[in-house]
Amino acid sequence: MKKYIILNGEKIYPSKIICVGRNYLKHVEELNNEIPEDIVLFIKPNSSITDKIILDRFNNIHYEGELSLLIGKELNHSDIPNIDNSSIKGIGFGLDLTLRELQTRLKSKGLPWEKAKGFDGAAFFSKFYPLKDDIRLDNMDFSLKINGEIRQKSNSSYMIFKPFTIIKKILEYFSLNENDIIMTGTPAGVGVLNKGDLLEYEIKNILSGTLKID
Ligand code: ZN
Image (cartoon, rainbow, N blue to C red):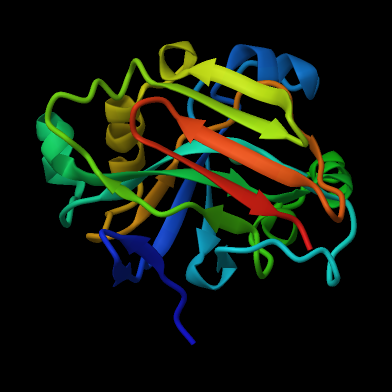
């Protein structure tokens, strides 16, 4: 069954999710990664989309809170010079869920991370909200609290690659379909999820919500 997200109460079916790795300096440092020379991209399949997190099937799932963009129209390599707010139709809060131990093991062997990043339920999304013309994507505050305590708090101005640059870099390799999602990378403060955790997420002036981990 195809998975969907919600925009304006309507079901939207993304064909893929393209994620940016290592896009905030402090997060690169907390995982002891190298600062990337070029953008790090990976893909989660439609089957990884979820609106709830249940810990029964996988152990040791880590959260990465991320600003997530819903692509508004078909884009390919020839659209690179023309990327602007009209390329994006919605914004949401996403959790790039990660099997960190598995990812570390695969990375150390030089193997692809897919199992650690693309498993069933690896991409949680809030409801998406329409992108208004006056929104500055490169200056958005967002945060994630767990059990009342701030764990991640940042602003998109701290991104190494900003949203329009991310889309241009993606289009060098991948065409985008309308309704594909881009996860723009996580700031510092990632960690493990536990049963019973209450997550509160916010993109300032746009959306907020809660999520209980079962
Ligand atoms: Zn991430």
